[in-house]
Length: 506
Ligand code: C2O
Image 1 (cartoon, rainbow, N blue to C red):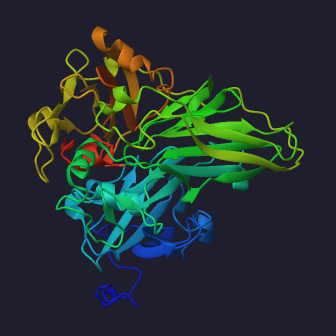
Image 2 (image 1 turned 90 degrees about the vertical axis):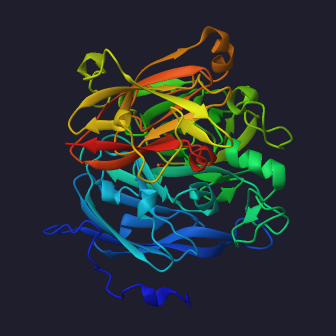
Image 3 (image 1 turned 90 degrees about the horizontal axis):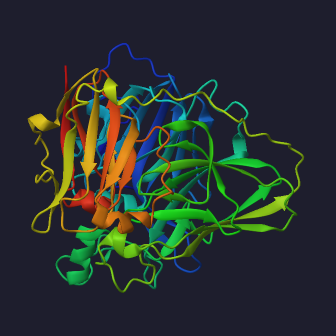
């Protein structure tokens, strides 16, 4: 029995944080951040901090879990009114952020809203986003990396009336969360030389010098988990599948490709379907980014294995050459998972040649088209920053203040710190479009090692900015006002300062 459970009021219908009178939810879900053990590898079970939960009212199939229970899958509809009663059963403060969703500031999972052990936070919002592959994860101050690593992450799949028309559904629509982990001889996750049990490893900072370096530069594991399972094999039938790939890793960038050389068919990005399917030899995915793929296994003999790999790239370009000595360095070539053709099914799936067209990207729609806001990634003494400032709970400057209902261009600049390291810039509360990328001539080679794999054509909430690169994005701020965040989604960078507030005011 959890000793702090008594702190939680017994009624499941507590008032939401933003006293939202008149809000009648059509789905009520209870989510618990809890310490648990799972069988991931043969031998000892692994201690994790996972999300458990249940549907309190509404469609019971709205909440399910990946096979071993490691991660929840919450399915909601656009326009649906949902209430989520979140209970923290971890031994430290936490809060949930709904990654990619537009919700009121008080429900966005800002670190200042983190709740202590045994406390409850009630989220109540209408799902305003397009159909697509979103997710949710922990977002406490300085501990996002650790909590996500130990298991605080889940899928949030939004559907709407027309989106999935002609696309695979049900068991043929698979979310796949890809993460890298490090484990010790007892099958326990190791993060910066710390374990989920809370014991510190060697040295004050956990892991001494190399731990300090990883805490700043980014943590990489050497075991790949897909939906919390190693050596993941997905049995498939001879028909088409929709695969929703989420890079749920702390800092690793993947370059996904089929081993048989068949190009990938991309149908969606962070914020839902593209205007039309795209074929790519490989797809580069930074932490927090998603792509939806369409793969047809028709015509494959039963028993065939089709492997998905991560292709090599110049790891030094992405990691500043700081992470020597790892068994699986950034940019290594390694297997991700396999699809095993397990049974025949007559399907004759046709990929629709076009989806609903996306609105055109017009720079002139921005109120600051002639003078975009610029956000340079900077580095201080053992801290990252943006335009020279690190994260402060309430800190926001006038250059970080925007007006509700306006469209702006923001430019992320990754050519101002001495460090040749990639960043995955994420903006809360919006979906944006990528306007363009530019790169300093002397750094063109570094960037070239990864280019071609971006899927910049769709709606995005996270964008990879390679060393030396400047990326301009166009975004519209809606009606929700208040304090939101923008940051690098390499979680160690986020936790060591590469995050700032921005304010939406009326
Ligand atoms: Cu998924 Cu503030 O991030």
